Image 1 (cartoon, rainbow, N blue to C red):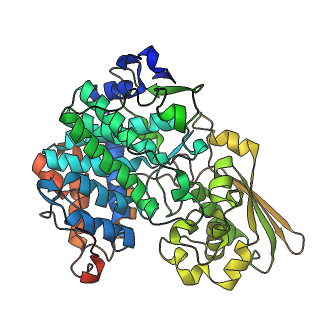
Image 2: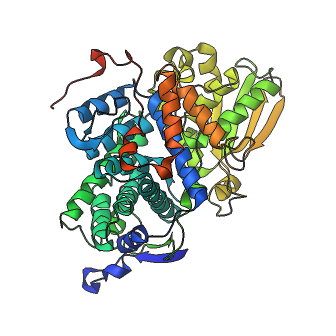
Image 3: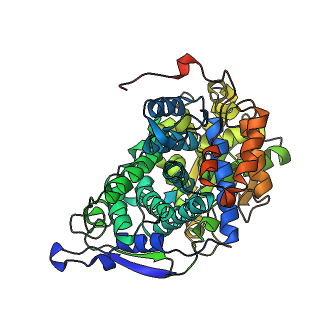
Length: 503
């Protein structure tokens, strides 16, 4: 890897394109280096993972609305939409939108956490949509997805957005544009312009993940993917972007991030170096924010080992964890909504006190049952929930930011004090499904996740068709890429699930 030095430059410097981060990203995207077998296999895993979580969200409000919008933009040859027949085609930017919302809605797909947070699987919907529209083959698609993951992970490793209350999808616009550039075999200059436009149009505040979290949480990454598709289209037509988009004196870094004195070192692959960043990412066994994954596993363990821990026997539960977990999904956020039994699902899946309470009582986590309003409102759950707080522990914060994969951790220590004075202390570093966890996810687990979430939503034959096809991904011919979608069982969609808007 090569570290790309990034800082703010006054316009008088006339910073050469070759010295700009967006250009370096474009050079990586245009590099025709081969994709390794290991990366290819992980791309297939994440295609299965995305299809699984999208399938489970097909009848949820955000996915329904986004799909209805997409269906009002038919196009030929076009791109497919999750839930619809393969013959139903829409404009690729709208397919990226609808499929991106479906993938993101349940907060149930892959993650990468470093200086910033991300769900790199959000790159797949826009890249796949363009592949179907452009007549690309499976090998091209794998290459594009490998680039999307590489660029997003590299940006996330180096540049914090949340520290300045900028939403994490500001790294997704550039990465998806770069991935599409690789997919289509575009030249460096065109990708450079697309990356700049994609970044410029996808910077927004983190209010979408604060307080009462709205349905926009699912739409935000889909919007970034849609903008990436449109940015590539404009760049291919010769249109240019604000330059330098990162380093300019009125650019993103100067006014949205660390300011005129900022300095970042962004790791990017050397020319000829394979794009392997997808291997650093990890998926979710449970439908909840990633920092809650380990705590669900801990709560399930305590449920089995300590039946004496009940709402009536607990005096307090304190979770000692990283800065991010405490301030984003813990009591350190100072969001009263995180303790509100009537809060939205989007809010509850960002409340580790709620999640820990339910998992501790039930010994399981289910993407529907665990969030049901009657479940959140149960008096004994509310009592337990209100006795759970979080605190930042400097050591767990250090481990969260460690660059050593063997040390990097997303868990912490829990201390339970019972009303009789008994103390129960335990700790967990990573989720069970993490590559270093108790039960790491492999192809078998990705397939099981898909089958579980598709049960009752897809016909059995459709489940098998998709799994057979996607596992041949690098061999697929252009006409076969239309099959990289799922069609809902007859009767799943009703006229009521097709809301009308302007179109």
